[in-house]
Image 1 (cartoon, helix red, strand yellow):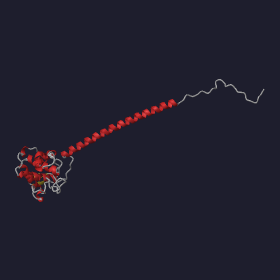
Image 2: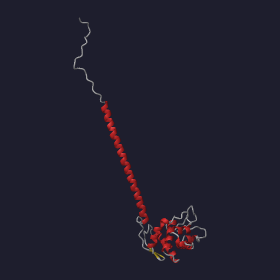
Image 3: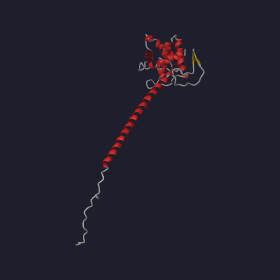
Image 4: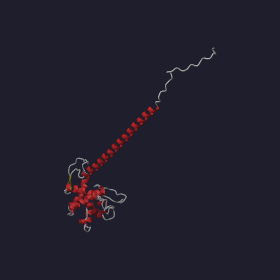
Length: 225
């Protein structure tokens, strides 16, 4: 007899809902693969960046070294166009010679003339030019420095009475004459190296200070003969 309740039907066969396999492992696998590829890409990019930076640094070092060599040879210096200028016995071109233009080569000519007046050969002329290069870059400087605030001229000679008056020290020919006077008075000066000879006269803090200017001095003296 009916009881007012709906009878419970047994589940039909073949209608049980199948559980879908979870997609989480696949997602994790794809995420891991993506992360791996991304990581490899970052590493490769980093390596390429490091290699490029190193290559650039090497190139810059090479360029700097090349520029320094060019400057030492005077090939990177452009001098104003000027007619040759007669300075005593020396005809001074516009330059460059060893990186120096006519305005500085004129001072080298005064040094050469002073040496010639004393019968000193080209080797000793070059010692004088080298010393002036190391002291003033062949500029007739009208000021001193911390080590010698009273130093003046091509050779940065001090106001101690050994180098004449202020006018003498600021006159390239006279200043060079005083330099050579002291040089030839040194016992055995002919056997000294150029930088040692200059140091004996100038009493520089570093005896080897002038050595790097010797090749340029020889080049200048040879060109101005």
